[in-house]
Structures are given as structure tokens and as C-alpha cells.
Amino acid sequence: MENVEATIEVAEEIQEVSKAEDTMAMRIVPAEEIEGLVCEEVLEDEVPEVFALAEEMVKFCHEKQGVGLAATQIGISKKFFVWLDGDKWQLAINPVVFPDKKKSQEVLERCLSYEGKYFRVKRYKKITAVFYNIDGKTGKLKKYSRQLSGDRAWIFQHETDHTNGITIATSGLDMTTPVNEELLKRGE
Ligand SMILES: [Zn+2]
Image 1 (cartoon, helix red, strand yellow):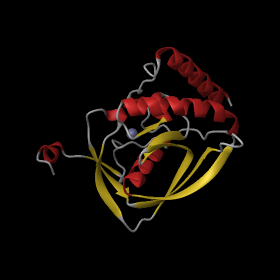
Image 2 (image 1 turned 180 degrees about the vertical axis):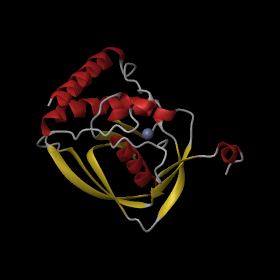
Image 3 (image 1 turned 90 degrees about the vertical axis):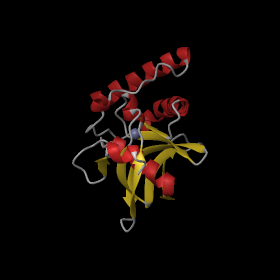
Image 4 (image 1 turned 135 degrees about the horizontal axis):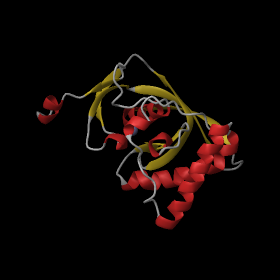
């Protein structure tokens, strides 16, 4: 598993630099590097690295006033992200979204990978989010299932898309339609 080892090395480098210079060393990679890039599942033995990285990602995302950040956005091609669940930051590992397809809505979204831009995106109003997090007692991966709606559902869909190489700017997918600039100026 050459790729996995390479990813962990990158994670360790980032952690070391992060300790020295706070979160300044973490950076958003160019959008074209993450578009279409399907990330690898997180494995059990990668949990310590993921946990350490997630803490730094929360600080970084908070500083940037974001509500979610996927590892792929900072150049770590692994399926996990941090997101703001109301007023609490959460970690989601190997996430899968099961939408209630009866109701969807078009929402305007931003993304730290496309600073200053808005995109009109179709999101399901209610989803079942299945993901793993780190069990505080055992330190191992533990599976969770949650019903999410509203902002929480949209954020979770946005970040899970990232882990599969899909962004709000992805063209040719019905989930994602770039917003018409003229309409935006008129406030529609
Ligand atoms: Zn994003």
C-alpha cells in the first residue's frame, strides 16, 4: 500500500510544521488538483494521524470562517472531513450519504477551494449520514448513523462529495450547476 504510506508521511510533515507555525503551514491546494480525485478509505492504523490532522483542520477551517473542510482540500487524499455541527466541530471518516430523494432544494454554497465564488447546488433536505469516528474509549474506528436535515444535511453532502472528487464547480453533474453571475448581482 504505497499510497497510504505516502499520505501518512505528508500528514506527519504537516503536523510538524503546524506545531512550529501554528496552522499557517496548512494550505488549500488548487481546485483542479482535487476535482475528480476519489480519495482512499481511512484504515484502522491511520487513526492517530487522522485524529491529529483533524484537530489542525478544525483550527484552520475556523480561521477561514468555513463550516467544513475535507482532507483532500489540503492535499491529503483520504476520505475524512471536519464539519461544524451547529456549534460543535465533528469528524467524519469514510462517510456515505443516503438521501431521502423525495425533497431537494437549490442552495447557494461557497467552498474554501473556490474563494469568493458562489455556486447554485441541488441538495437533499434530509439524509442519513453513515460515517466512522474515533471511539474515545478504545481509540478505534466506530460506525455511526445520523439523520441530518437543513444546514447540517447540506454541509455533510458538500464534504462527502469532496471525498469522492466532486465539488460544487463540477460540471456535467445534476447535483452541481454553476450560478449565473447576473442573477447573483440582482440578488436572486
Ligand atoms: Zn468545499
